[in-house]
Amino acid sequence: MSALRHFIDIDALEISDLKSILANASELKEIRKKEGRRLEGPLNGKILAMVFEQPSTRTRISFDVGMRELGGETLMLTGREMQLGRGESIADTARVLSRFVDGIMIRMLDHDAIEELAENASIPVINALSHKSHPCQIMADVMTYEEHKGSIEDATIAWTGDGNNVLISWIHAAEKFKFKMRVASPDLLALDADFVKDMQNRGVSLEMTGDPYEAVDGADCVVTDCFVSMGDEDAGRRHNMLMPYQVNDRLMDAAHKDAIFMHCLPAHRGEEVTDSVMDGPKSVVFDEAENRLHAQKGILNWCFGKI
Ligand code: CP
Ligand code: NVA
Image (cartoon, rainbow, N blue to C red; front, top):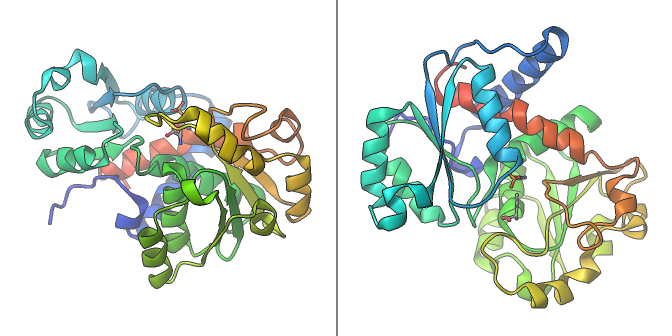
């Protein structure tokens, strides 16, 4: 087994490492708040290649700024600009990049390709979103939850909407951080039944329903995501099926009175969430977005062996 510290999926990591990453993220957030931005740090001299096959605002900027604030540098690439776009294999791309840079962060729908990149790289690889999962996002989400509500252990997180990549990483985190998940999705967009059974067999408290009101009943946190993820091609059908899962004031009122609302963003206001919830007192979505920066720095420090 490789001793390299890849960050591909939360379920493949040790809880001690996940907690170190979050502790480092919080510490760096505090220092930045007190002392302002510094462009030097433990990653001085390191270069991170950032490969994006899909668009990104938060992930791209937070990794770029985070790397610089740790003293390192970045190289921004798209698959199209590389020979990868003309058929060079992912394994050869991994071998070549490993000769030039110190780490690779990649956003690519094909999760198996990210795994193959990691298997063939001799430097750390970070999954910056695939169609299967979005682990970096959920590190920021756990951090945000704990800042607002205290320890996430035993908390009830309710998801309403599509059974997508962000939800899968939430469920991976539920296993590691030991919180409960209640998920409401329409049947045709629900998570794969084998995945659900497997996670339940592994001891995850994971309840599935078709009713968003049942999912959010008394929950500590309500989470949703867009109706149409990158790579989904059935937008019209998804809109019709997912409108009843919209997070609006009525649904938020069915959660615990102190519940918070989270969304990885970008939000499609008026679709999966109303303006009144996004901009209301329970919404922590912009803290969540900010925490991408701090969590990313924890992930980078961990990948490069600095924590
Ligand atoms: N939440 C998230 O990953 O946002 P971006 O697609 O803008 O990176
Ligand atoms: N589920 C969304 C998340 C975007 C950050 C997508 O994959 O497009």
